[in-house]
Length: 115
Image (cartoon, rainbow, N blue to C red; front, side):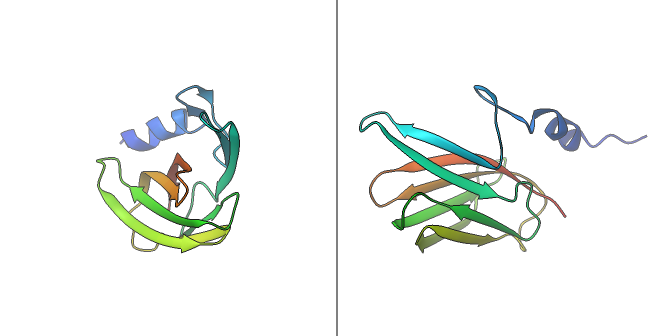
């Protein structure tokens, strides 16, 4: 029987973050300087052909999607409170997404692309 290590590892860690349990569907962060809560969500996760991102405001956002080696695989600029990233040209695997707005707010989360 062949074991695909990245699948076994992902099945174990996909529900956990660095600080404990992590809900992959939506999260929030706090801006420690201004005490502002930033709500955002990335869905579906795992994704097949596209990722949808809901941000707390209609600011101008930039999104970077990096692979496990840290290479930026996709970078988009988008305005509004909902955004879509096509995953059609990305190989299956675990990725790290970072979103930054023009006002200095940012978030990051891991996402999985499956086929």
